[in-house]
Image (cartoon, rainbow, N blue to C red; front, side, top):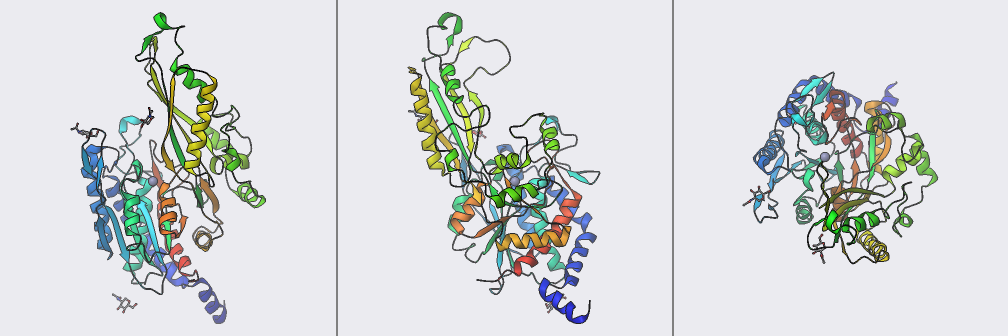
Length: 491
Ligand SMILES: *[C@@H]1O[C@H](CO)[C@@H](O)[C@H](O)[C@H]1NC(C)=O
Ligand SMILES: *[C@@H]1O[C@H](CO)[C@@H](O)[C@H](O)[C@H]1NC(C)=O
Ligand SMILES: *[C@@H]1O[C@H](CO)[C@@H](O)[C@H](O)[C@H]1NC(C)=O
Ligand SMILES: [Zn+2]
C-alpha cells in the first residue's frame, strides 16, 4: 500500500488499524485477568428468583458498580423500590446500576443494557461441575450466568477498560444500565426508564443489548424478538372435588370442558385456530426468504439437540420462520389437576390451564387478549356446559423488530467482518426480551442486539457456559463495534 492509499484506508476505516491492533493486543494479553473477573462474578449466587439469595444479589450490584467506578465511570445506583409478595410482605429490589463514560456532544452516545442476576442452579439439577465455580473444560467456561449475562456485561466493561488503559479516547460516549431482576421480569425497570427518560437517557442515541446468542458457529446480529401473551383459563364446576366412582357420569366435568376448549387453540399441524391471529402475520417477503435461506443452520443438529426425529416443518426457511416470525400457542400446564404419580380417582372441581401465545409484530397484546377471550368463550358456549369459564391474560409483553439495514446493523456487519472475517447471520429470537420494546417505546431510540454467546451455551439450563473464544473475541467485537458506530453520520 502506498502512502496515499494508506491515508485513504485510514480515513475510510475511521480509526487507524494500528489502534485496533493495539486495543485487541491488550485484550489478548489480559485474557487470563478477564477470565478471573468472570470467575469472581460467577461465584456470586445472584439468583433473582430466590428471596434467600437477595443479599448476594445486592452484593452483585455493588460489585458491578465498583468495577465501573474503578475504570473511571460516573456511577449511580438507582433505587427502584420494593417487591411485594402475595402474603403481603415486601423486600428491597436490587438497585439498578448506571454509569457514564464521556459526555462529548460531538460524539454519539450509546447505552449498553445488561443484567447480572441469574437463573437458579444446583449441582443436583444435573450439573457436571459446581454451577457457581467457573470451570474451564476444553476452552469452555462453565458456570451459572457465564453466558446469560455476566460475560457479555464484562466484555462491554472490559471494552471501555481497554480504551482507558491505553489512554485512547473512546470513539463514542458510553453509558451502562445494568439491572438485577431480568430473570424474574425486570421488576421496577420500566418505571425507572420512564423516570430517567429525560435525565439519564436524554443524550442516548442508541441502545445495545447483548443478552442473546448466535444461531450457529457464525456470529449473528439479532433484529427481532417475539412477544408473549400469557393466559389463565379457569373452568369451575362443583363446589368441591368429587369421587369419580360415586359422582362420575352424573356431572359435567370441568377438566373435560377445559381440555375440550384447549384442543381448539391449535391444530395438530400447528395452525392457530383463533380467528384473527394468523391474519395479523406479515407476509414473508422474497428478501426475507433469501435472508433465511442464507442463514447457517443445521436442521439435523437442531433435531438431535431436542431429541426429535420429526419437526413441524422439514425445511430450514419454514422452520426458522415459525421459530421467529410466526406466532405460536404453547400449553404449559393445568393447575388443580391431579398431578403426582398414582391412581387417584378424583374429579377436580376447579382447573386452570396455563397457555401462552408468542406473538409477532402487528399483534397487539390487547387485541390478542380480546381475540383469545372471545374465541374461547364461543367455543365453550357450544358445549352448553353449566360450568363457569374465566379467561384472563396475565402477561402481555410486546414483540420487537428492527430494520436490519439500519446503520446500527451496518456497523455490526462491519465489526463482525473486521474481527471474524465473515458476514454475520441476521437472526431473530423466538423468545421475548421485553426490555427492548420498552426502550423503543419510551426512549424512542434505535436498538441493536449484538450477541457474543454461542448457540450451545445452554442459557437457563444445566451446564451453562461461554467459550473462552466467544468471551475474548466478543470483547474485540465490541471494541470494533464502538469504532463503527462512531462512523455513523450524525443527523
Ligand atoms: C412471604 O413470602 C415471602 C416469599 O415467598 C417469604 O420470603 C416470606 O418469608 C413470607 N413472609 C411471611 C410473613 O410469611
Ligand atoms: C493521555 O492522552 C492525552 C491526550 O489524548 C494526553 O494529554 C495525556 O498526557 C495522556 N496521558 C497519559 C497518562 O499518557
Ligand atoms: C377471573 O380470573 C382472574 C385471574 O385469573 C381473577 O382475577 C378474576 O377475579 C376472575 N374472575 C371471576 C369472575 O372469577
Ligand atoms: Zn439474560
